[in-house]
Length: 142
Image (spheres, helix red, strand yellow):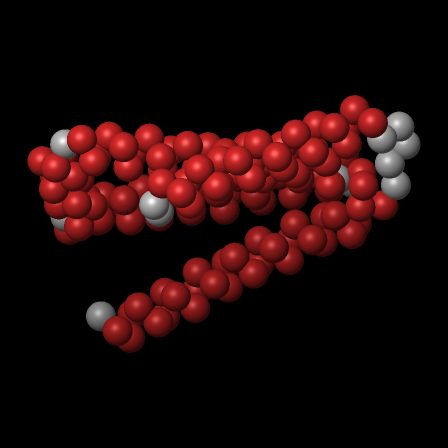
């Protein structure tokens, strides 16, 4: 990501977060989508701001040191580092599976609305289905 896109992303993030905070403070009794929209704007705004600033800072740091840029590219393309990252993702996926199951069970025991609970269940089943699909796909390829 170049610097202008990073700056634009950071500014867009600040604007989205500011609009979200303004909506939180001004809406007394929000209804419908306005109950969640301000918080979504704050979350997306903070994420976009962090991503944009991170891109600008890393780009500037690398521009000043070509040797660091070369080392960074080598580290990103190194097979060992890629394998380590993939193993970490696999462990996180396994942990997340158990965490989601525990969360769904806790919500069910708390008597959470059935629609919200079913959305969690379907999202978890969809993610597991994607995992199974790619397991078979990569098993055939390799």
